[in-house]
Amino acid sequence: MGESLEYSLLFLFLEGDDDERFFEQILLERFQELYTEVKIWKYAKKTDIQRKRFIDIVNNEDNWNYLCFRDFDSNTCITSKKESIISKFDRIVIENIFVVVEEIESWYLAGVDNDFLRSIGATNLMDCPSIYITKEKFNHIIPKEMPRIQFMRKILQSYDIDLALTNNKSLKYLFDTLFSIEDG
Amino acid sequence: MQIKRVSVKNYRSFEELDIALGKFNVIVGANASGKSNFISIFSFIKNLVEFGLNDAISLVGGIEYLRNVYLLHNDKISLEIEAESLKNGLYRFSPFKEEMAISPKKIIYKLELLITENEKEYQINEEEMKIFCKFFKINIDNEEMKENFLDDGEISILRTNGKIQCKVSSKSEVIDKDLVKRLYLFDDEKISDMRLDPDESIIRGRSIPIPFISFMIERILKGIHLYEINPKPPKEFSRISGKSELEPDGKNLILILKKLLNDKKKEEKLAEIIKDFLPFIEKISIDKLADKYICANIKEIFSKDKFLPASLMSDGTINIIALIIILYFEEKPIIIIEEPEGNIHPFLISKVIDMMKDVSHRMKKQIIITTHNPEIVKYAGIEHLYLMQRNNKGFSNMVKPEENKQVQIFLENQMSIDELFIQNFLG
Figure 1: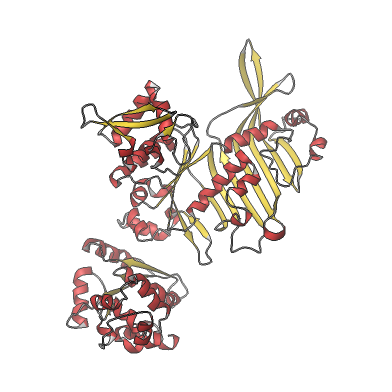
Figure 2: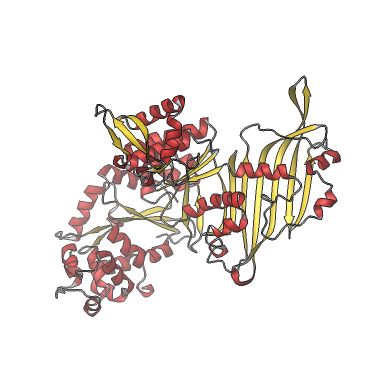
């Protein structure tokens, strides 16, 4: 994927700003090693027609590619989630879909441990593994006086990718599929 | 006159920039991408012309704020501006019996500053003015003036290390040495003996014995006008005395309105345009108050005879009135407006853009605006767009989305330009 020296462009289809923040800080550089240019396309507020049209444009161009990231959102299994994405995106290629389990907040928490979270004032830390963290549970642990953005940025600044790959299978699957683990 | 090209090196957030401009130019870009630094090139040149180099530098906070903070090894800052005349203006001069005239077609002004000791001192390292023009001989027969075309030519004034060199040349060498002398008003040798102070620009160099050339350049560059409207001051009482042209922030808007409303034709023209934007405004009046103050009042169609004070006018209404005045009533050849969309409803933006296109294309005024507004991007048209962005070294860079192949592909596939702008896909 994108290994030739000729120009290649990758679009990362992401849901929203929290995804964008995570990808820009943690993953973008790795994608940039595979592609000449990487751009983020946020699809959350797009209509089905706009999504379909965008995928058509990317599919029609040589050297343009895309990867679509979507939260698992407590679906029954990855396959059924991917099928629901296909129904929403139409003409999307299943190999280009990556499911974030549980939600992007899980990927944030996967890279830090509870000691770190306590050190930045996180409260209500539960014992459940970070992989099952939903948006609501994540919001619950943010210190009362701390803006959500600041909390997320603090996590990303101390992010341990090796720890994250141990803690979150969906993130590890992405790395196994696209990047060599040694690079991580 | 229209600015055709701007280039700078080691200037504020730019390492190097060389960009051609059109009649109507819309500059977009993320926050802190360098849009205002680009606009500051024009305010710096204008301040240089109006107040001199020391004040122009002082007005940006000192030489350390004029240079790029990441290029401290580079001790030179350069700016170059190229302007083209859209009218056939004649500048007459008659040092002797015979009258001559030149019609400037293109001017180039270049300034290179050298930062000297302790990073706070500076001097002009090199400065050049070039005028590409047509030469005419003026004959007056029976009080009727006739200009006879002589030749195309070029007048240049180069200053290196304070020493001045002047040169007049013509295409077919019709212009002889005598004309050169008449242009200079002095001999070549005397001019080459002249020296200027290290911080004295040739534009304002009154000691230069070719004053009409400096005057011409000064007049052209003084045509640049910058605006960033603040709608709050016009809501308050305004002094009856003040400038007769709109201030850059629009603070004397009420005074300007008073002047316009005193002229029946102008009042009618203003009222028609305002009504097209804001149909509920029936009349604007200016009231004199005690102690040399005035205030504006508006009458809406909903009220029989009640006028509302300016303090109740919306910010958007004030911005629209200010824009109308800038575009249609101020006689400025080069208009630069930062974020003109301020407080204006998106529904009205297409009209604002139509107005700007009308003024730039039909009335031959050049317009440069900066914006973050997707509606402006949509209605401006890709051919008028410039994208300012920072490269991976932090330097500002300006590109034309129209020339970007990715953008072309998206547009060919029915994605709209404002959609691409919002998605950050213009670069």
